Length: 367
Image (cartoon, rainbow, N blue to C red; front, side, top):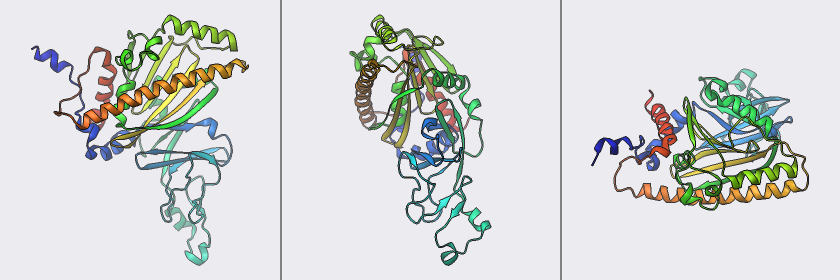
């Protein structure tokens, strides 16, 4: 047996990291808190008092529009620690539903019912009760939050992907689907799955297998990566018919298929320069994740045929997601039943997993 070849295909993350409870808090601290995380979209924050929320592990995040100014906070009331905004999105003041404490754009309590009788807080004392504030920035459709007080700017963090997100936002303004669903798998299992196409002929024989070849070009940018390639003829013909039917205006900037993996938990797919999906793989706990998936279409004339196109894309995406969900649950079950703590085996078509794992290990050990 060629040991050197065998060892060259060993992954970098031990199976324990996918199943052991001891690593999850450390991931929150070293992976997620320092990263810029996408928590929602600018379309949902256009008006005064619009808000969105997100959940990363047990950490709740709220972004609120204060008369055009966006502020991000830990979604925990300073009084008795209730969640403040309890819906995924909406329009209401930043007011706790428990006792009505209301907060301003700095996170300071600006309305405390019966303050004089119950607390007698002066302004200086109210400042001590300000919500934990997070860094916030936007690029195109996307709203990003960084929980750590220090770190790179969003543009520095995203690198070349900053301009990519600007471009796809301009080309694809027609949002037609937003959905969330839970998988019985560690968040890294989901990211590993999204990072490679080696599984496509076996997991997606009648969906992605019909449209996507395996000869995809991989490039990396700091902690992030992408693969690009050409769609199969049947898919190209379908998109050209769609282009004629609804006067679709695709971008010519990218190859026919692009997949961006933005560390730690964002997957963007872009097909025919016209169909954009954006997914976050948010950790819930060691053995489960929540995927938030949103889809946009390029500019079009909005005729009746659009609804047929959108329905077809929704149905296709749902089947693919279910196929991935099922296999990732099987992987998680296998990891919990692992015969040894040997790392995963990774072949040449799984190079992006190696890149992802290298970024993960670097963060976890602090190098």
